[in-house]
Amino acid sequence: MTLRSLMFGSGDTSRATDLGLLVLRLGFGLTLAFAHGLGKIPPSDGFIEGTAGMGFPLPVLFAWAAALSEFLGGLLIAVGLATRPAAVFVGITMAVAAFVRHGADPFGDKEMALLYLFAALALALAGAGRFSLDAAISRRSPTRY
Image (cartoon, rainbow, N blue to C red):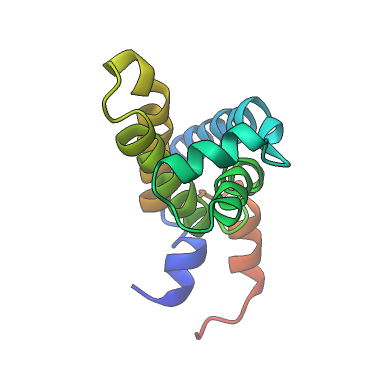
């Protein structure tokens, strides 16, 4: 796998698959950005205290990282720009939410974080598809990396 295909995908999917990836990216990315991320920017004192309570050093920095991962990562995924790296950051954030923040909680309390984690993992593996900015960049960039 080349750096180019890792960052922007290989473009070898069917139209139906690409439409499915578009629907997934838009629904997942916009919901994550606006329903979960936007309200955390700037991180509230409670969010920062919760981050500190999970044992993170520099809780202000990690609270900002989580908030930006959800908001900016969601927007990047929605438009299909740097989809794989954005999905990795979102996936890490959701893994922390599911297994650290809600680790001792009942399944229902961690379910949403797990769903976001699985969608992020799918997009990190599959890429954005042909209906994305990643694909447009890949078509215009030189073939060697």
